[in-house]
Image 1: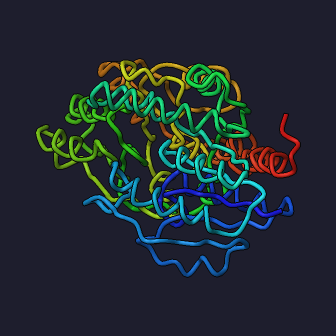
Image 2: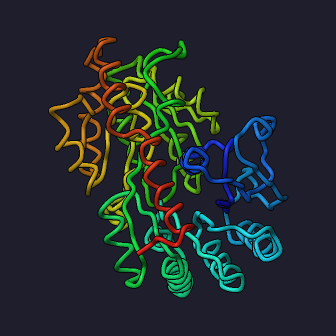
Length: 389
C-alpha cells in the first residue's frame, strides 16, 4: 500500500509535528506501507533523508524572517505547489495531511479530482487558536470555514485527546473522528543522557504563540528572582510571541537572568530539559483553547523533569488523575502569584536520581509517541484498504 504524508514541517525541523509525523511514517512502514513524505526543503542538513525507511521529497518554500514556514504567504508557497505535486504525482492509496487547514483544503480539492481519500491529523485546531490573536473577524470566519472543509472532507480525522475530538466535532459535525492520543518521542526525550553545566534554571522549551501566554512566567520569575539569586529562566524555541517575550524580559530587573535560545535539535533540547529544576508550560484561559495539551509537557516528563503548568482544562485533570503514579509537577491557575509560589516550591525541592528516572519510566509507559503512532498508522491503513466506517 502506498501512503503519502503532506506537511509543511517535517524532520529534522525541531518541532513537535516533525517528531509526530516521523513516528507515524515509521509506524506505517512497520505496518507494511510504502511511505513517501511531501514536505519542504529544510534549513538543516538533510543527510538523514537517505537513511530513512521511507522517501522524503522536498520542495522550496518561502520562510519568514526567523526562518520558519509561518504566515499566509509562506503557507501558500507550500500549498499551491503541493496541489500540483499531488495532482500529477504517483497515485497513492491514502494521504495524511497536517495543519494548517489551508493545506488540508488544498489536499481535499486535489484528491477529489484524483478520487483518493485522505486522513487529516488534527493535532491542533487553528481556528480556535486564532481567536486568541488580533486577526479581524472576517479572517477568523475564513479560517473556520477552511478548517471545517478540511475536516469534513477527510475519510478520517485523527485527534489527540477526547476534548479536542469533541471540539473538532462541533466545528465540523460531519467529520469522521478518532482519538489516537499524543505523547513524546521517548527515544529522543528520555531521562538518560547528559545535562548542561548551566546551574539551576527553569525552562520553557517549544513554540510560544500568543494563545499560550508564556509571558506569565517572566512576570512570576521577576517576583522571586531576588529571593533565589542562583535561579535562571531559559526559553528555547520560536513562535509568533517570541519577540514580545524578549521585550518583556528586557524590561524586568532580572533581565540578565532570562535567556533566549533558538530551537535546538531534539537531543540538545532534551539535554536542557533534563537539567532543569522544572519545565514550564501555559495556556491562556481567555484564548478559549483549553482543549489543547502542550506537547512540551510530555517531553518534559519523558526527560524526568516535572512541569509547572499555568492555565486550565484537561492538563489540570490529567495531572490530578495521575498524581499517585508520578511526581508530575504543579498545575496552577493562570495567575502570577500561584506561578511564583510554584517556582519557589520547585527551587526548594531536591530531586533524586531515582525520582527523575522514575518519572521518565512512567512517561515511557504512559505517554510514548510510538504507541500513539501505531494507533494512528492503523487508522490510516484502514482508510487505505477501504475499511473506514
